[in-house]
Amino acid sequence: MNNKEAKIYAFIDSQNLNLGVLSQGWKLSFKRFRVYLQDKYKVVKAFLFIGYMPTNQKLYTSLQSDGFILIFKPVLEVSSEKKVKIKGNVDAELVLHTMIEYQNFSKAVIVTGDGDFYCLIEFLDDNKKLEKIIVPSAKYSSLLRKYSSYIVNISLLRSKLEE
Image 1: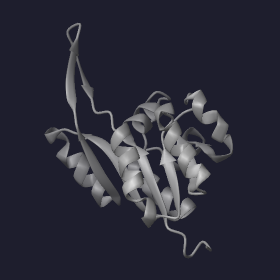
Image 2 (image 1 turned 90 degrees about the vertical axis):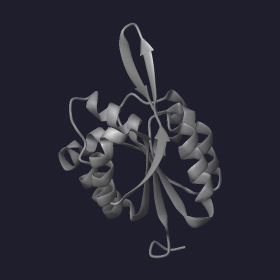
Image 3 (image 1 turned 90 degrees about the horizontal axis):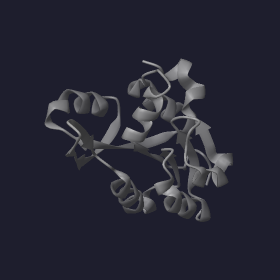
């Protein structure tokens, strides 16, 4: 299959991406990131897995207009020691949707540094469907180090992708 026929899909753990980038002191332009995925990897569909909060409708509309397909996960408000944390773990949704779409793409770009995706990455690699793993910082799961030849650290792209 040549590049013109290849259908590349991206599956993005938005919380892992966002928190990883913010931890380095910069903010990602999702619009620029979508253009980067298209230009660099010819990504035709970019699935963004994100926790759903009604107050974030403007953000969701913006992300959709930037070209992302949003897959929502209901969030939980978890209280601990007078603090309320929002939990919207999207791991199961990302794996499930990757497998739902499996027959529709020739290669996948996975955007996360989370070792919980090891089995998915291993499966995609074994089946020659792994294109790249984009990690949000140099601090990513050691489980993914086995796939270092696929890994791109987004912090190296800061000048192109910063908001």
